[in-house]
Length: 296
Image 1 (cartoon, one colour):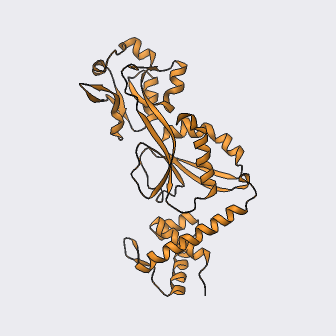
Image 2: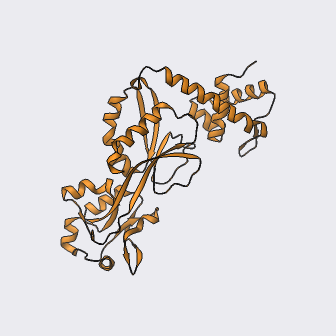
Image 3: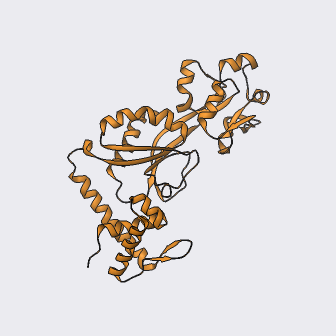
């Protein structure tokens, strides 16, 4: 008896997710059903594909060899199905997107109405994590990552570059004075980040070294930092996509512009390394890239 697509999908998803329970959640099936599919597949092939221990599942040598073939079959099938769709507008399915809270609020959310109008059959799930997550563990199709990338298991597409601004509210500056040089910042209330500490290094220099802020108040995400700055709590450093409209509207003032070393933070869309990216995910990434092209 030949293997079925459902059995191949169960096997590959178990490997990707690292457990039968998580694979079941991802495929929206029961754990017992996924387990039986794997058992049927192993019985048909007359080999053990995964070694089960109390803590984890591990691919056997035969499983590692078969995994590549199974992925290829599933990728070819998905590509064939996509090719039969009459138009991009017919694309359907769920896209799970993850990004830091500020990027979701200030970039993705304002674009969603246009995307949904363009692809009415696609469902979107937006999740906010201000720390780097494991895409497979969180069942994420595409994530937005900032800065340099180090994970070799991921594909990435550069969406845009966002420069950094040092900002404060007019009210804060009226009460505390406007810093004229980097050293003046030492006399001010600085707002920074509590978890992503590298964001507390600002694009200016003091004593020929990059200035690392010692924040009087910290927050875990950029949107909270922005709100603190808008409330006149102190001076902070944030990306353009977060504060550009505030600067244009006069809610925040850009500081030390004549002394800043322009630093552009790279922003990528990343997705799990696979031969065939689902068309709905590819269209979403291409849509973001097109909308953010002016910032490349």
